[in-house]
Length: 157
Image 1 (cartoon, rainbow, N blue to C red):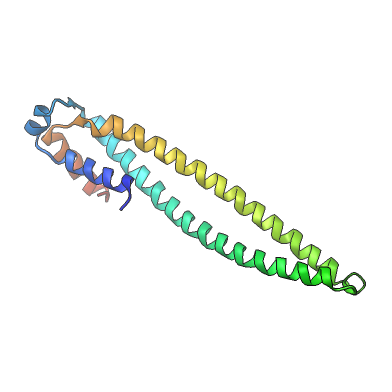
Image 2: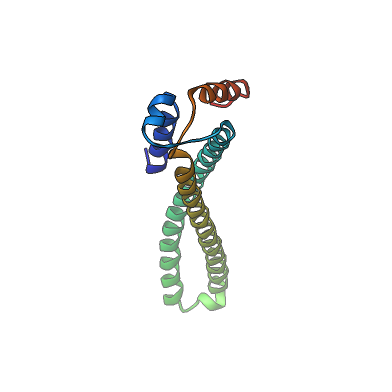
């Protein structure tokens, strides 16, 4: 379990504490609307994190495939360079087309990785803001129970 998941679990545990225990801790008491907003933000972050994990797995697999393909292309480049008849037979031209296509795919993969990294950084920033806003706030037990029932009725956890 990563840091983000552990903190979300800790937040859920904090939200389930009794009102007396929360108020004794010196935390600010939030409103029911703030509780709803925090739980909705938590749901959003969890969904985005799940999507990010799936994208990460795809990017890793693609990166591994590109590494294997790069090795093959380098070996083929060496064979074409050593073959004196490669130019006349069209072999060099075919290889160069293949190499250009590979470089375009690698560039698209690099852009996808940059987008992934930006999205990951945004989730981390949003999570930090969420933690600062929601994890340090206490909620009345009645509000927690009411929101829990609302969420169950809406099919949310």
